[in-house]
View 1 (cartoon, rainbow over the protein chains, first blue to last red):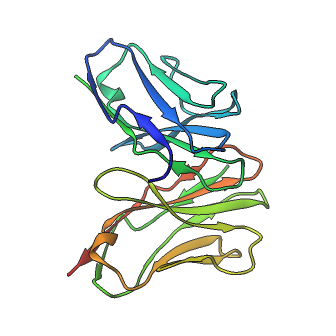
View 2 (view 1 turned 180 degrees about the vertical axis):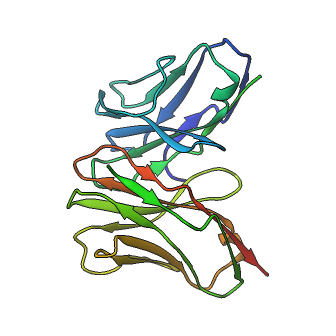
View 3 (view 1 turned 90 degrees about the vertical axis):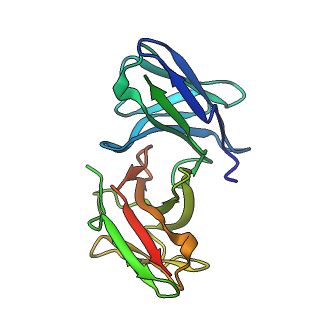
Length: 112
Length: 114
């Protein structure tokens, strides 16, 4: 158990819908990262938050947004979903830059 | 730009043998960390081992060791005494201390044969 909790584990939804993925980092970790893993794209960095503030943005679509709350949990919002958004979405947390990140078990999103 | 390269899409190893998974990296940042993660078929990403760019000794964690050759920009993972449970995808990753994201390779699928 990495200590990072992601909910839900599985999500099936229709095209055009909006979903929210939730992540609780390990106790004491201030950084949260979101990654998307699909078969054809590998692990793609989406966005990073540090202590409530956005620190880095990767290949995140405009239809996607995220935030980190004062209690340090984070949510990834995916809207106007398309079939191609089907993927495994990971949250990871770390104490700060330069240290290892621990991953949650992921949320497997299926868009039908 | 930062880049991680894993050139072995798939590897096979006999149970109880050692295996080396290759990883090369590219960065101009003098300070960085190298990581290996394991992803079994169940999907979770499991942190295995970390090597800092200024570490003098190669990192070891149980049966895992990281063969760090800084001049060659390589960070190969060595798994000793392979077990059936080692069958999984293995990802090499890097993060520079001035950057914020982890850069991942494309992964190597390891199959341990009984």
